[in-house]
Image 1 (cartoon, one colour):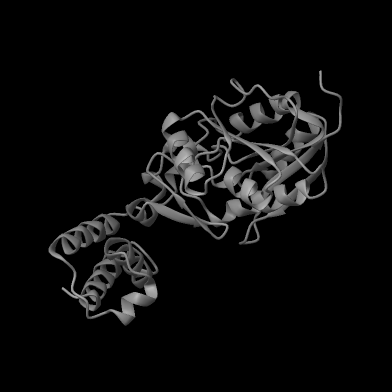
Image 2 (image 1 turned 60 degrees about the vertical axis):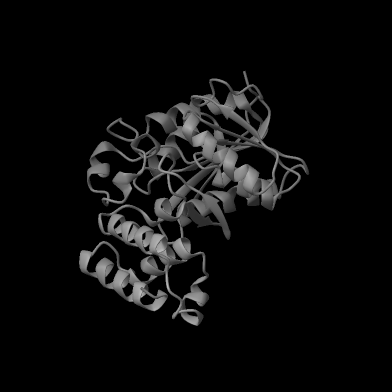
Length: 285
């Protein structure tokens, strides 16, 4: 089977399965991963024959894709904020909408001190905290997650970009020692159990614990973060939270009740409200 034949076959298989609106793209990404070619090289070297092993691996990957297994888990990486991040089934796959939280955080840091301290809470793959550290090199970034498996992926990504970060195994703030962060940014589990049943089969392949807040409102973890974060923020520090557009109003109310000010809502790339930020003005107890 040549590259051209493999691509044609896989595109047909993925199209027939109706698993994706972009069967050619899916087929191309999987083939690039298997044969170690760029997407341009798939066409400039389209007469190149796959080895027996490569053909077997490609057929297996395409079969798994037609069964709704995510592309990112099959290739082992996902682009986020212009960089590739390692992902395993132990972590949530980075989404473009989460780049909104990065943009908001970087904007807030640009207005503060030259060496801000940032906590990426519920960090998963580490894409938020590592991106902030790379985009704002003078920042000191701590990443934490309740999952040791997730933190192993975080460490892989930190090593991938040769960046020195503090990585902490912690259930929210349990093992966080620093209490003087300039900014806490978080993409916690916030999908309700009811919403989760409506999610695509691909989402159901991701770790449920990274997606679902088991409360009816999906806000129990977010509420805990809002209530506890003032004890870990510098005066005038910021809290940046990703949530669902249906939760934004409730999150604003919770932040206001916790004495955050300058509460701002930022939409994601599709125009839906996605990120809520607030400033901690009160003196910490």
